[in-house]
Image 1 (cartoon, rainbow, N blue to C red):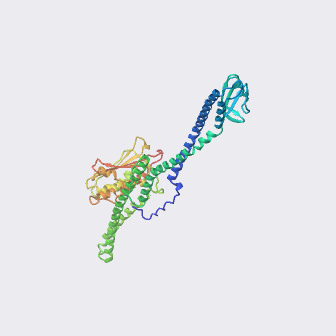
Image 2 (cartoon, helix red, strand yellow; image 1 turned 90 degrees about the horizontal axis):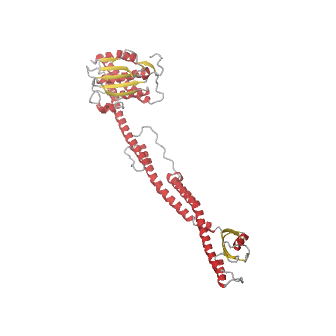
Image 3 (cartoon, rainbow, N blue to C red; image 1 turned 60 degrees about the vertical axis):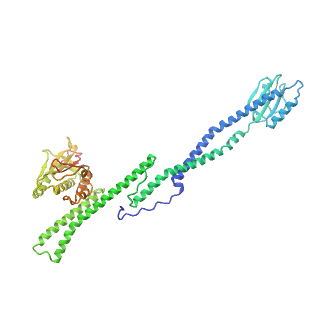
Length: 474
């Protein structure tokens, strides 16, 4: 139910795609994919490069063993045709061949340490500087201080090769990240969009809207919350409509009576002898109307921060005795016994005496309205605990028709009992119990409705104790 006089909510601002959940999910997922690829590359590339170099070293070692078997150095120090062909084939593979004879190498560039090691009859394997460049070196010693050494330059080839192949998995990872992010964002954003649409419809007054409940649990909780809100709003607005209807009926009744008598006076229908009685009737209806308006204003002000309250130390026994002076005559006038039950000692509480007397008068008014002649009305006061700091309890009981268990659940809701029992038994405006409950809560107390031993309803008000019990009670 739209609130009358409320300004319409401004339309939501237009959002850029970069500010959407989808864009952020794509960005985060792509960043995660990129970091994953880079971390994998940092770990895998050195391993791949070392594997390539190890493979090249092993291949060069095999070729060195072959060369050692083929390049047999004769005493005449001449190479045969097979050795020359092998050297040419190796050089075509970018492998340099050095022949060591008698501790001397056939051409410059080979480190002296390698030559000396071969001349000493020991093999060489590893990486060395050859002609100023880092190279793989495999040397095999032959008898007589001779041998053969194969070298292959180790450039950045393996690194470039691996890095060139990195762009494909990187691109694939980013593409997979974008696709996964789009699917994830769509899956996450759909229930949020549904919830936003439902909230907009609720704001527009559609209380029948419901959000589908779907996993994950957080989305399901959001759907349950919105559906519960819609149901609560529908229930609240239904009660509000019923309350307004009942209040309008209560307002119309005294106004109709006042208007009728006023028209009768204006038309001269009421004679001089009947004028005083007519005036008293109009005054009673006006007082009833004034009480109703006062209750409505008090209910409207209860939730305000500036609602006037002046709590002071109060003796609840004295308050009950003062109420007895007022209500004993009113009850006796309609044939209802009124009884006050108080202890011998004072019952201190810390509350606003005017407001708590308003609560007591409202509860007694409510009881007197429904109690038949001969049934009792009881006002009882007792301590809430063994110490004055525990506070006190004020109880109003009656021998009227009472409440059912279902009535007790809604006893303090505005107009709830009025709607149930209008036309069944005598009812008031439906505001008294709601006003009493609101006042007690504002005073820091508690109020509950129940069944009385006298057969009717019982209202129990518990009030806080005096935080400074040495002060004198009002």
